[in-house]
Image (tube, rainbow, N blue to C red; front, side, top):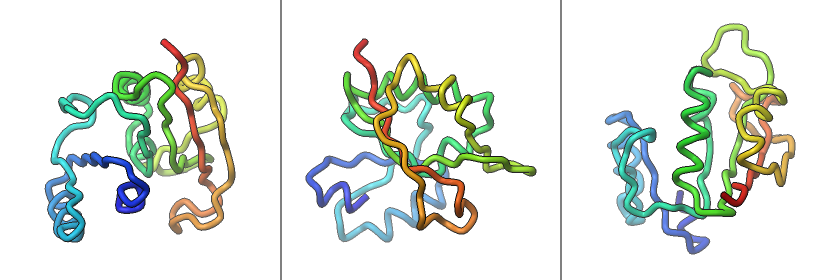
Length: 143
């Protein structure tokens, strides 16, 4: 979050876990950045629409039955031409979670609403995702 703030972005972060929010806010107390305790799917983000939404381990933590809701919410929260950027988990997972994407699932989920601008393999992943992550940037198409 600090990297985005240091690059001049106004940062809004959300998590539904009280423990995660408390520990993150404590760690960031000197930076002025705060994490909101709330539900991504129905929280009233006063700062929306956003230019960028950063993804890291959120989509793969959701059961695939919620993925369409995730994509719909992104469209609601992004400004026209806004970017969804981050690390996406691809592959097979015999005992999810995490729930991996496949190329066909990503196309089904994002195409039509987003255009894939960048897709690169990630070489410095967290161990659980090693060799299975891609850095991707998806641009919201004009409405």
